[in-house]
Image (cartoon, rainbow, N blue to C red; front, side, top):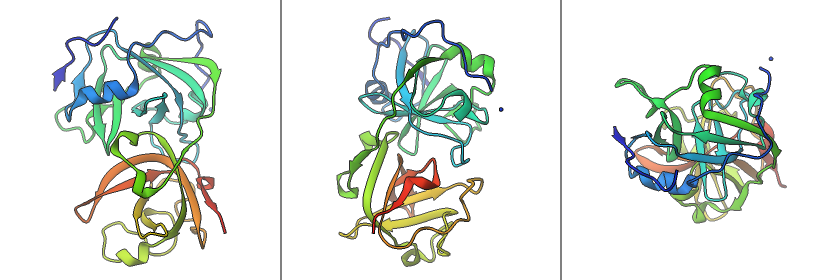
Length: 254
């Protein structure tokens, strides 16, 4: 792992904030992501990012992590605790002091946590304790629900990974991928599902075994789906993927 040498200028209870005036940030999420260049970086300087929470683990599709977004992009925070929606609810503003953290990339999404061990699956490790979280993350009594960006599969790009998007005019097409590992052809959410738009472009939706709605039936007909954009591989081919927070993030539109 490399270290950043210099960058710019210098039921849980909700974490308390010293002030409703947020700590100043000194780098955007997008600019920090650009610095990675395919590597995992150990931060040794006073770098601060901020953003609004855009995901929720309330229905257990997100596991011990949550996502934030500023005006430039999104990132995943490896918090390492359960019931994060009670600590960092969707829409709340947080700042993250990155000195002592590691920053990497997983599924195209910038990931922030502690330094990973040699055998960790993820490029960064979980913060894991409330004391460590409070040392690095400050939550403010400032709320703004970030709306998902309306877009189309053909218009997606990797700079949007980690951000909240909405794609409409989708139909379930998983049965066209019968032999794909972890593909669900039973019409429920569990595992991977493929959706296609009117032009035949495809996107994957992944649902955890632990999601409350994993075994619920996917709505028939055309739908719009919102969630955090990721980039993964299915059948050796790169696919954009969406990770939903709630079952209601899939809305029938006909």
